[in-house]
Length: 467
Image 1: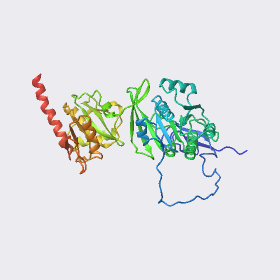
Image 2: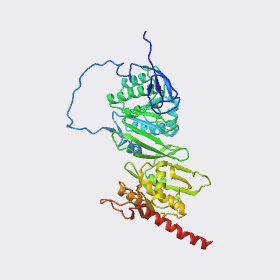
Image 3: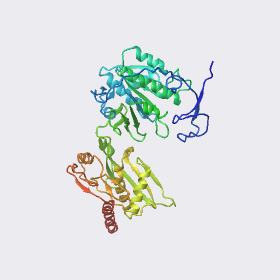
Image 4: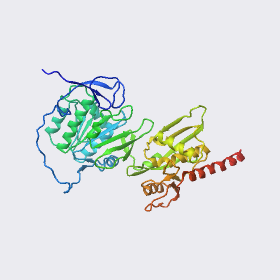
């Protein structure tokens, strides 16, 4: 009997090493390399598999195209992020922190599809059937015709799915609990996760069923397992939120059949997740309009305009190295804005402690928030509240200019719908309109900063006279 070959695989990135070592050369993680047995089945290297040499038919690039068939759940926010529903024959990876509500969201989507007459199979590797039923009854979904199973072996799951009528949607909760006979390693390891995901993705392509895989999230906020799993699936969705807020955000970071960076907003209630049709009103709820350091940013999340509050606090620092605390935005982007304010605008702000927060727990990734951040910083520094009915958006260049951003009309339309009267941004394009708002167009950041600082200087003598 031939001796089994061994490999040393990093459990964070999937890099294979010829021997064990303390640090992975691929991702730099320490103590993440585990000894695994090399397999010749699914997911094995090309040398282990037998090539059949069967030719395939080549077709021209030009030809008829077919629109991808979808199963629409009826949950508007979920369908928005997926691009209009789950595509038949696609594989979707959903990740999120433990207890964030991934199983609740998918169970609600499964029940909505089952009520439409679709065949839905929910396979849980973490909970027993009785536990899933208890959750469904608590959510008021106990009467939905969803087929349940509690199994972790991939071969048994695939045999069960192929034995009956072809399902429309298959939910696997979660991919880290599955194991296959083709791999001799513990469940949750890189080899097991990759092999199981590949087998389920192949089933989705052959059967035409939409397969949803639930993935755990590491302490760094990444889906556990090798990055190759994200490359194998057609869409990757992150379910975000924290225990201090009741709302949850479903964000699409990859989608072959729709827009990326699309978000869906839900609110966690005692009866499950409730859709939030107007997230801008939610993020601006209970905003302190008269406080200095508060600016409203008109942002874009995919194709949806979202307004949120950016809060800044600038205070004298008693330390030699001032503090920089950022929540919901890129810390390196804040350093760039501070450098521009110091060098191009002559604002002495670097010696202060600076705290920046995106209210409501929303995470902003686009550079259009530069102008709102700069306005909030100067407002806090000069103790001058910004106009409560004004929004800010624009990208700041290293030369101190304000660059225009895309989708300006959509941002202005959303602001006008929520009752705002003015906007401050860069130069609008030829096809952009103010939508009834008083738009202040700035080509230089120093012009806007000068206006905010002047109001702060005028307010200080008035406050002294009042005292």
